[in-house]
Amino acid sequence: MALNVLGKTAIITGAGSGINLAFAKLLLRNSCNVVFADVALRPEAEELVKVHRGSSNGAQAIFHKTDVTNWVELKSMFDAAQRTFGGADIVCPGAGVYEPPFSNFWIRPGTGVSKDDPTKGRYAAMDINLTHPIRCTQTAIGHFIEQNRPGVVVHISSIAAQRPVLSCPLYVAAKFGISGFVRSLAPLETPPNTQLPPIRVNCVAPGVIKTPLWTEHPEKLKWIDPERDEWVTAEDVADVMLDLVQKPEYVGGTVLEVGKDQVRKVEVLNDPGPKGAGHTVSAAKRGEEEVWDRLTGSWRE
Image (cartoon, rainbow, N blue to C red; front, top):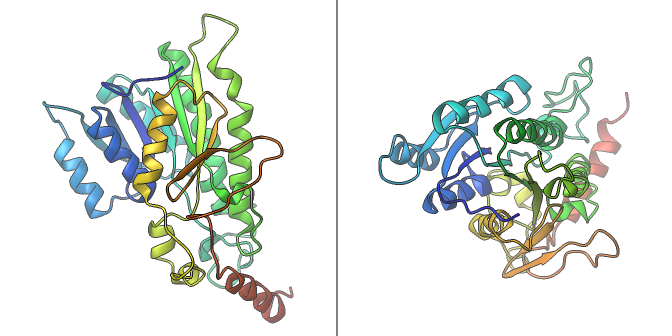
């Protein structure tokens, strides 16, 4: 079920920066309206929305302030799409964090800079990276059925879904979860009941992408060896995401790995794993050393 984006409407969480902003730009260039759902917009995203807000010639854009950990606010972005554009056809629950200090497995809740509350029973990183995409997809499915319209949900997984990383176990767990979740929903594209609209759910699995998740976090950036590692651009990933929406061969359940100048389908079983340009983090041992230092120095209750 390929879906031409011309004249359609997309909701993108985390559209204020990074891969999601690149995807929003690409959709707007292809005459697709976009709801920018984020807690705030960076100047570049703010200007983009301003240019396309209320446009009478081409695609339109609106900003809808959204905390993706709040299910009421997730539902409200669909309401905004309905009020402004008559509904949504494409949903990208792309907002994410990369094992940040405020919600990090190796900084226990209630200690140090962690903002996770040990009395609340939740990790913010998991709420953002895993629970929000699941709930967003659930809401999208209901929206498509209510509107009786075909729809596409494009997720953002990672090569971390195939590669264990000691320093980022919450991130790895979430991305493993996203890839499995997407594959589980593959049959929605071909429902046995003709009263149900076809719904495609698939995802990209990017390698090392030059976005603020890396560039604005010096504790992560030092894991990159500029002499040995190569960046993938957010625009490279956005191009593949558009293909996941529009190309017939990328059916529901497809996971496409994106490296530097390379794209390949990730198989469910016996997959060889990511390799080559755009998939290496040569100084990752530094992150592991930090873990051992924490365990030695301050892990005891």
